[in-house]
Length: 138
Figure 1 (spheres, rainbow, N blue to C red):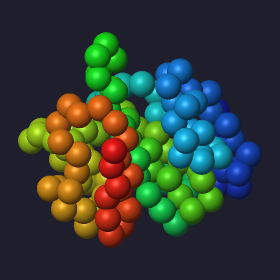
Figure 2 (figure 1 turned 180 degrees about the vertical axis):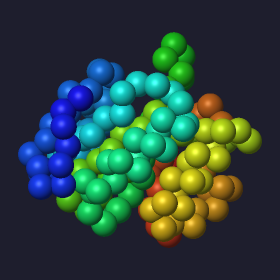
Figure 3 (figure 1 turned 120 degrees about the horizontal axis):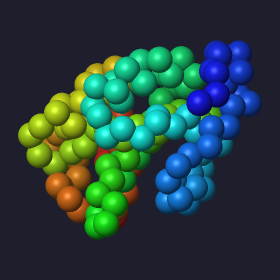
């Protein structure tokens, strides 16, 4: 992983490991992506976000992406108004567990109060955009 400093956040490009991520980057209009090393661990995602959130300005939206078989990926993009983003893979939604509790923690860290009932249903493929005041889905 590249060293990250607040002064360099406009010039950092972090190579990502999932081929699908490039397509999501383009679709979401992401300029710079800071990618958590693949772990699927909620606690690691929390720590990574805590360290990297200084590289984002005002939050504009969160993209929740679920990819089903054979990958079974839950991806969370936190995107700022400049199109910079942090990609996390330890949060999930649609059931009661550590991943969904982690996602609610993330929204709290962002200062957002998101009603859990507005989040996507469990294991439904697609991308949902979460804004401070509404949700958009497929």
